[in-house]
Length: 302
Length: 308
Image (cartoon, rainbow over all chains, first blue to last red; front, side):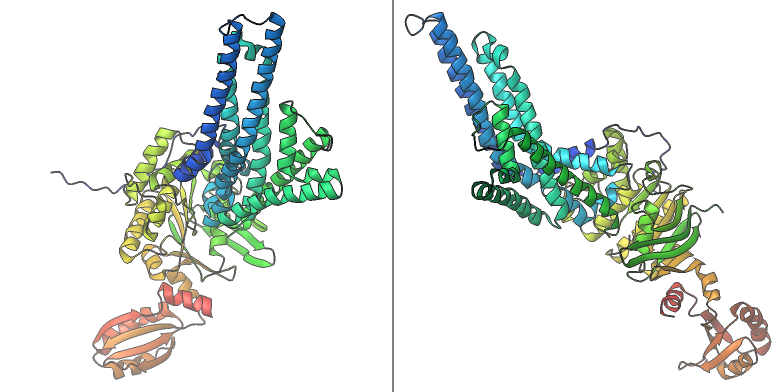
């Protein structure tokens, strides 16, 4: 046997590295992969929404199946055409309401998932000093933030966006003569828009709390406390002092936006929609400002 | 010798706390040891070199460039911080691959380079264990692997020997030597003075945020004229030898040791002393068996510098 020794340790890299336009992408992939190792949390946060989605699809199918059967006269003589059109309009409206109601149920899980998976994203990096490894790479702080934000958005958005879109797709294929697609096509965009607004609101607040906390458990408690307390305080002050205090709650603001997006009833005692949008935008901007400042200040952590 | 690192009046403070103050230094190629007690400013200096933090005043140039926010330069620097810095839920290979992806490598080359780097530092890349189950030594190796995996020109290592057992330290020092032999430059901070001494002669000593000394250990020692150099001689005729040594003007003091044949002396001009002692010994017939400078080592130099 020929003698051999592994003496080479170092091989200087002489090739050219491609400047990747999505430098944050490996962060998203790595963080999602790490989070996906938490099987119990995944099961708890994603199985109920999956069940809700399946039930929603089934209900949509049932509605359109009954409608289709009546059109074909399976239950005796078919109703007149006007009645059929009115019935179809009612069915579509019910499907819209159903999608909204399922989303309302799912946002609870989305909130839990976002806070659970997002609360450690910044504070744990800071605690372990992982940012020291990040920032000696060709990576800007904006890339870093984008990677972390998209990770939080992935976990919260998945619970809102995926079921909503799947139910819409299901309704498209089960509705007679593509009536859902013809008359309710905008629901695809509304679901997408709502998911984006939701992840922007919840994700930015979660990251903000994470950037302020020293440990994940504190961030977890802090984020839940913020959402719950802001809602409670806003409701109490809104009823006792002035309705405009309701704008203090990001969750309530998101709910009002959801109702407007899905053309649901908005009560007279609600603040104006423009004010709700402005309040949410201000909250998100403030949260992002805090995160940006904290990440920038990390250079002095040692 | 072209400097790989040049700092000019470099200062960095954290609010009211001075991390580093007025440091002017040039570091040449090869291995350089950065020494100093806790809180001396070593980590601050290394972070400034690695571009982690911005100087509060002065300038630092690494491989001819300003390191802070210099993404092109980050490709040429490998940094292993003192902190753990690793994700507990990841494996070593996953971790190093991920960091290589952040450096700009495509998925497959990143994985290949990560495997090679882990093998080089003595870790099995097929190891499925998560980092949280790693020993301190394995963590240090993983950190070193991520620092050298992208083939940097300069490795900046903050306390890479801390927490390692003697065998781990020996292996790590061997890796540093090989790295230097292969053409990489290494700047490492350490508390383990004798092992740094075994690794390199080139040192920087910082204390309370200031540079106390730089250069080769022997040269630095010679500059410490306030502390006469102590030399031990063993001879068959110690008393006669001591008497003869007292006649040399560069010898400050001579005394006999407790052991038989031991003579302890202090000199302010070691070079001149060594030049004259040879002929003295040859002519006098004192039966000199050994001659040893006892405080020319790094440990003594470090003590003199930091304790005054």
